[in-house]
Image (tube, rainbow, N blue to C red; front, side):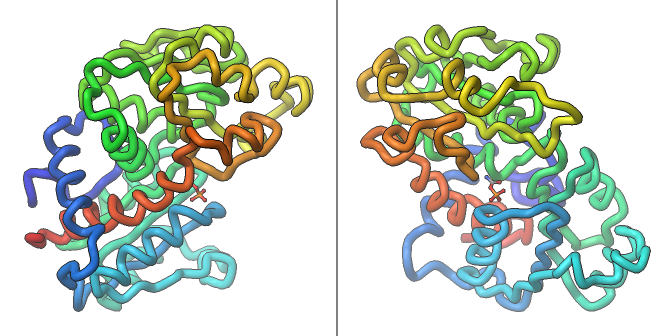
Length: 307
Ligand code: CP
């Protein structure tokens, strides 16, 4: 395996050294330019998405195509998983057809890790988001985007705001930014949408958005994930926006050159105002662009290629 990714799979960023991430970023820099080598020619990549996705799914497809791989867009709704076939049997059958990289999104924490434990030699599992556990390629692309604007990360203050409790993105962002040596990492959200402090080591927790945003260099807004709530944890969308939405007035409290990020999909007028999402400081679509380069770097590295 490449020193950039010492394992055969990418399941979480927990425990990944910052220099391994930097090595992936360097590879992403090389692969984002035209004329890239077709290092995945002859490989077959399967998108196994058991939850909806736009950005992650399409960017993995584009990344695979741009490196010369064949991509199989597995349609869960019309697959034999609907007839009771287990995930493990699904994996075994797709392996038997010569598929060698699996991009897995699942609502249950641990599903990509479980498949990784049982994958055949030479087969890689890439976690595309499991429950509220991890979304490692989003964590990597977020850190990569921040470093392109704020290379002096040790003197950078990043605020992650919103529904942290249900956010796999927040967990992977925290792992990435801490491994890369971020100066200050703030976490903020309503009490009902924050995990216990034990889950946020090294983070400064705020209970008001105005405090979290003050002088921050990077503001990452999170989506309110109602589909993961067993019961209502907020009074209303309007109430949430009033207390926790990022609008122009609140953004003015941040550093004047602060950048605004959001993993998407955006709930406009719930966690972020249109004027901010589409404004001068927004890097939201740049995150999406960078996602393709990061996913090319991850797939090329797991395939053991040099480029
Ligand atoms: N950021 C992200 O995971 O978006 P999708 O759900 O559209 O893939």
